[in-house]
Amino acid sequence: MKKFITILLSLCMVLSTSLLSFASESDNSVVISQLSVPEALADSSIVDFLNDTGEMTELLEAQKEIRAYFYQTASNYTNSTNILSDVSPSDVQEISEQYALSLPSETETGTIDNGTLYVEKNSRGSIIDIWYIYYPITDKSISVKAAMVDADNPLGVVSGTLMCYTLNNTTWQLRSSTVFSKSNVTNGVISTWNITKWGVKEKFEYSTRVYDNGREHSYNNKNKEDRVRYNFDAQPYNKFTANGGNRHHFIPANSLLRNGFNTNTAYCIRMMVADHKKTGSCGNSSYVATVTSLLQAKKYREALQHEVNDLKSKPDSEGYHGSLQQKYYNEVVTCLVEYEKLFGLR
Image 1 (cartoon, one colour):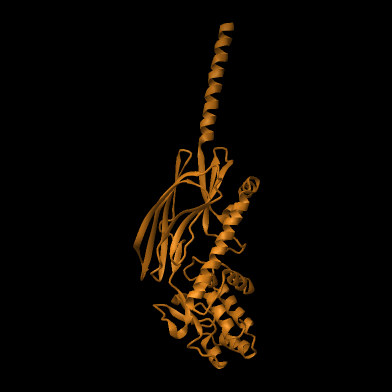
Image 2 (image 1 turned 45 degrees about the horizontal axis):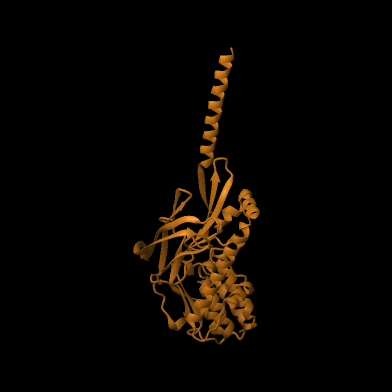
């Protein structure tokens, strides 16, 4: 009997060791989810993790940086359209707040949906780590940037390929591509690709690989149009052409004309035709009459706000960029600056 009990105990010890080994192996399995910032912030477990680790502050700092990037880009754009302009990023922020402009990629809750959070969980569903990779685009470049990566626990290697496609009529054509790679990645720029905009519409696709803790994780946005830039413009009507689109007077031409303003030198936005057809002043005499009356009463800021509200209320015809005001953010800022000058508000 003692011998039987000894054998039984030995079997139990072996079985327990096997179970512990299996549990350990299971704990080493990792699942990584890709979430947009709004999706992540809607998950209470992710919010709790970010708050507990202090990474919520880092995420908000990254969001603040993206906001500053939009203000800087709009500042550069506005000054480039008029050599007499001296509009600073803080001026752009003031204008955005004055007219309640929404930034490109900004959601109704005020979050900038301009990157991807990578949420790493173990087999029990507990969050191990979260990092943030995003791709800021300017008229001259696209960057790959990281945030929320602990300085004492960098990502092993982040590498991949960036591709730029130009829209030719209705067909996407590969314009150029580049590869990037960086080891021991912490917060900041991973890579910047200098490529000046050329086509009326361009998109960037990425294929990104993260090597970390002996594992490889791959991400891409193949065949998506979530990283695009356009060759829109905001200029006086007589200074540029429609280039296959329409020139949209920010304040209706007829309203300007009836109030003694020169429509040829008034600022317009080069828009895609489908977007222009959505604007309130396109073929709508009642809308134009309202703006005309506001100008006659010298309610210039109200007239400008009327136009902003119209663009905010109209969805992007392509379905990618929220409202027309967000899609044409830089051009709207430029027009607001120039019309404030025209009306003696600036």
